[in-house]
Image 1 (cartoon, rainbow, N blue to C red):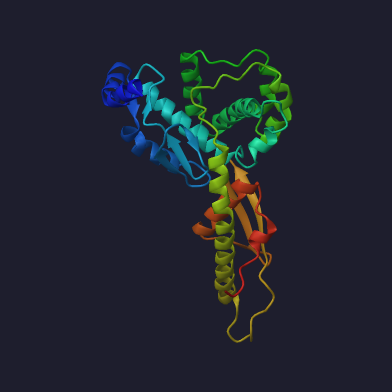
Image 2 (image 1 turned 180 degrees about the vertical axis):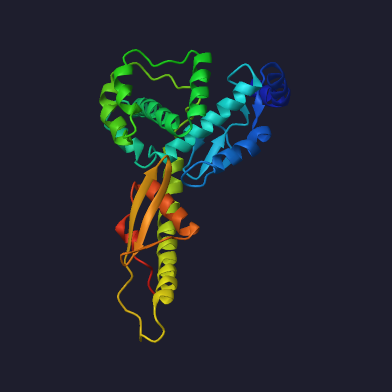
Length: 297
């Protein structure tokens, strides 16, 4: 225990020395700028928080207290920004939509399979960022070059299909057998980590809550719109349940929806649109039962 106690007692001086010697960037110094950057990204509104490592639970992005992998403060800031973008992309482009440990459970070493799958997804998501944020994508390539990070031997043929605009998580899963037989994917500096347990806990608490909120808001929206359409002298309104239909539109990285009520196009309020975006990110669609307006009570 004595060596451990000495280390704990010297932690503050160790942190100060590390900050002086390696042009680190501290979370508290960059949180404001990167928080605004994250809020401006498409999809579910994510919060930026400090954590022990870089990962996301699908509602929050966590960055460590210090980013110090590179030699200059400017590059370390860009690395933190690139990591935020990669974690956002895990949420936005479906990496966390499925139970990843279950998908890897059939391999002799499931944890290694998960790491290889993370490598495949890192390549796919980096290509997605290239289409959405081309300037940052160029910076990410430069940061990898500074650290001499390249694809392991044999990976290039696998990753080529993942660069296309139609590539999905299912494509990475289809390549996992081949990737499992290749050398380990050495993590890229900006890829962050996967935390399936945190994702599962966060998602479980969100699904029923958002289903209830969306159904209630659709009922309120239907009442408001039908009351505006009705002629006061035409007698009682049609008692038939309102019927919503939604068609997702994903153009230039902005996920939006074409919504109709009883066949008539409507413009949903921002709260309803954000709920639809969040549900779509969880399922890849909006399940029909989510579009049934809530009844009385």
